[in-house]
Image 1: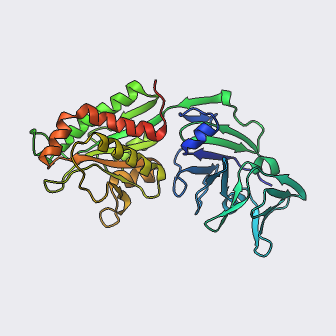
Image 2 (image 1 turned 135 degrees about the horizontal axis):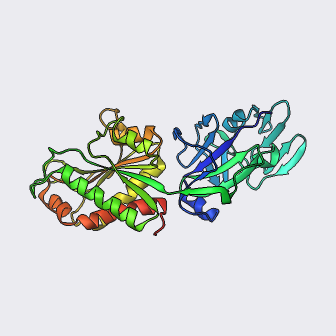
Image 3 (image 1 turned 45 degrees about the horizontal axis):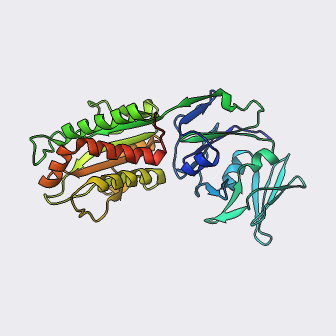
Length: 359
């Protein structure tokens, strides 16, 4: 059987605690994970040397163990899959190996040898989910877990899997893109959205860089917010998170923060939620928004918000945040007079989402 390199990328904070690992991105040896399509599996992503393995059901953490859709994994490593509906068994075979699973059982038969797993084979959304660790135990793969925000666990057929001592730590990179809407005037203060959001973005970036173990990158202000502008710059700088900072307009009496996210990104929704909650905790104006969390991919008749859509397509966690309304005199004045507190709210939302350590 031809064995291929497989790497796992985890975006689940519970994994960090489970394995006692640090909250930083890491790269193992010379393995490259650029240009990954993060579609469908935002919590746990599986990447082979052929690219990301696509799942129609996201991998799961069950009883502290990682379960992945069996068919996609088996086909990636060259096993043909058959299902026996009467006996509730699934078999993966090639010329060297036969692996038989029984749904609801913790026993796997590999070439007539019984192997006990530490979690039951189960069904999730009509897909058979198997414990990933069994790969090393049953078909000769070696597993090394490597921690971090965006954790990678390397699974290889080679014995020279990188060890923890060979890991080079790389900080989480957060790209901050302030509004370019110079003509959106504030109803008070003789200022505009672009000027105020550039000021806010610089404060957020400074707080993150000065206080936390991450790297905040301020967008090149001259670049557009479209695909080949700031999203491409963020991709080229190998950013992990993309945050658009805006203020809003709604007719003069609207109030409340709004977070736009990609519906396919649970982590993006969590980030938007955490920032909105932080802003709500300091905003003295009663909210009157029907919803503070919106799927940005549905905006503009399904075209989507550029700063949610394009960074997501480049593999980043992307949100666009409307801080408050600048055409409401009360909320506009609040933005202008509470810049430090608002920046701190953004930082708290980011840090809480990704469990970023203080320096």
